[in-house]
Length: 139
Image 1 (cartoon, rainbow, N blue to C red):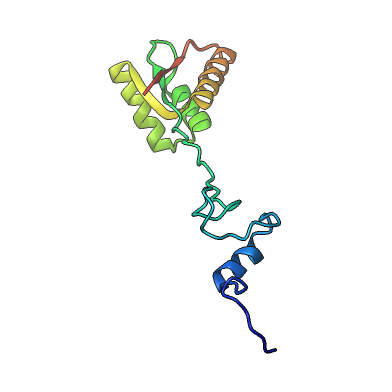
Image 2 (cartoon, rainbow, N blue to C red; image 1 turned 120 degrees about the vertical axis):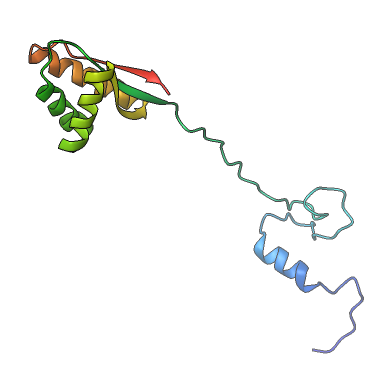
């Protein structure tokens, strides 16, 4: 192929790649830098930026057991093992903390999980006729 081409007839490699990779260029839009549109001087070409949503960490809540004079210590240990997945040793340590100080932390959870655990413990205690109290507070 031989022939004479003017400088306007030649397309740079960059322009060819742009047209090949961006089918959104309309007819007549050649991607030259003479237009006043955005996209680095190329009409119809712009940078698409996906906005990443800023997610906050959820508020955390402490689930607390309160001491009373009627609930057996062994029942409190059982509750800690069953509803908070504590080992026998960890449950005994928390139970003694509650017994001596009046209140103890069973775990820290998101609001919905803490609320569920509180209601499960209270329902379980009532079914077994114990006055054990469980509550939650924002951390």
